[in-house]
Image (spheres, rainbow, N blue to C red):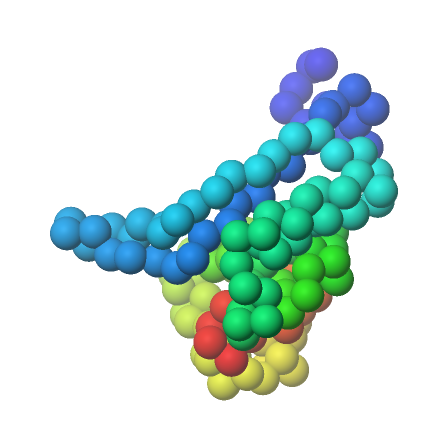
Length: 178
């Protein structure tokens, strides 16, 4: 490797372990920090679509042994939108994918970091579109950012961010309580 970024995807010699945890809810500690209640961790290396199905089958086996499945109203699968995470919503009954707010914000920052003084305004506009539940409005903000972006690599980063946010719109709507 001569410089950062020389490794190109897909990586043939990389193993990606998965980790999933199930919990009952969130409690607030005395210091104000959130704490997951009754947490159970699962993880391992699961290869291919069969491996992903195996992982989620294990999760569902645990859920159905630890809880009365008929009494569960909703299961939320919170994550970054990776295909293996979204697959959980297909394999787990009553499950819906929710995009975590950390990754949502990370992509907003990537799309706006070059805007200098107007960065916070652009992020606020994206949040405004999300809170109003108007995907077309968010798309318009990203399109405006693209119009004022001259650097080619930054342009591609804005496009990736736009595709990520718009592609995960249903999961964003759930993460924002809608």
